[in-house]
Length: 313
Ligand code: CP
Ligand code: NVA
Image (cartoon, rainbow, N blue to C red):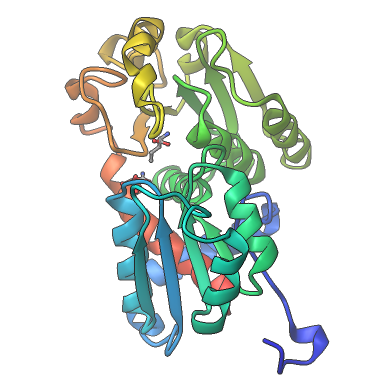
């Protein structure tokens, strides 16, 4: 990077998803559609470039889709398994950043704390991409809205109801929905609402696209007439000790056939996966024809390829 003229030096990160305004989300989805339709055109697009994948938590979808995405475009992926040790424990996050930037062209990181990701980005002159943190899961939400656009043709005016924990996935759906013009209704138990600051940021973006953001209590109110119903686990990775206590609190938020019957007749069901079958969602809903969970999973690959090309050029 140091050899480039000043005006060409550009560090572009994807830390929260708010780096992409509504116009950039639109461009991202157009590129994603082209990559999905014509993957051969992008075969050498990352030629000779390497990425470090740092994962503090387990992953199926994110790891495989990043590795396949990078390798299918001619790049190299180096997976760093941090399970058991957190970033910053063996050596400072600053030193991890300062080393990695000498060898690789970008970092993809799944972390317990958003602030670890931000520290990594502050010290690395290469792009840092959020592969899930305690606060956000931007790659997931972009793939989800791309999937909904494929299904419904247009996101403007579409209503997505998120039912369950006001967690990282909920936050990113709020932020991405607001940018695409989709209405997002969230219903959570008391004490499990999404972050007020993130809701405020989503409402700010929604003013531009005229999307409606609603934070509710009753799951029935959220799903009433919605075209998309979304849920996620009641206890996220790192919250395993709270899982039993959360079960009673969240049981009224289970997405089952009775709840789905209150959504629009052409509605679809979404889940980022992994799912806890029989808990936040029943088998009957997850395995129904209206469930598009595997389309979401597939689109993680295509949208992340588009993210990589957008950030790495
Ligand atoms: N949805 C998602 O991010 O899945 P993984 O935890 O398996 O990566
Ligand atoms: N909220 C979940 C999402 C997993 C993809 C978690 O953080 O564990």
